[in-house]
Image (cartoon, rainbow, N blue to C red; front, side):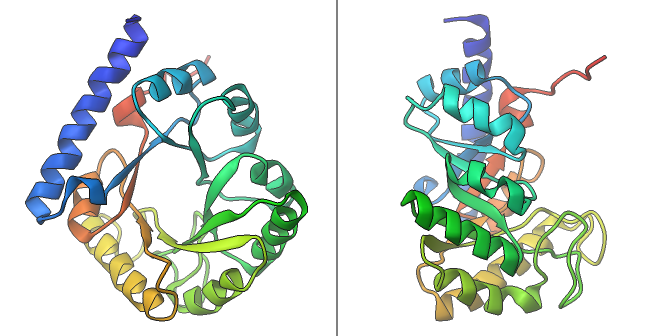
Length: 239
């Protein structure tokens, strides 16, 4: 085993223990929570090692980095998640490799994703990114639809050819009433998920929690956690 593979194996085992402990504390089964490893800024060689170690879900937030990496790893049994703010001019590229787009937050993006998914004959899973730092109808600092806009956007995705409405995603906000209150933020997302599932029962994914706050996300009920640093380490600054 290479030094890097050993390092990743050790980190994965530690994250696994954290998730298992969080599930136990919340009275949940471990299999209720899916680990997504966020591989942004790390090379395709790390993705390959992660696959060898059993990882099946990876995430990226910049298409210019993700597209060549996904192409280099196209032989691996991986589901790629796109988690960054997505501009419509990148949709054609992203639909080429991403099984799920977790950052759907506006109607123009839904239209572009649907058109491209139909063109290439793929079904793309969509999570609505919820901005908990926004007012009822504004947008968040890092993208996302305000809680008041979820229902309309969800209906749009659900009715769009080539798209599948899978659920909700959020990033713990840095400003607003939930700043520094990750548990409360994730509980709010769960409430919004409950509301969504009344009209879209299949939209049961809840993506929340990262390296620093995965326990709070699991406690709140998240079905997917997005872990980068705790698995891959802190990337040194360039230059």
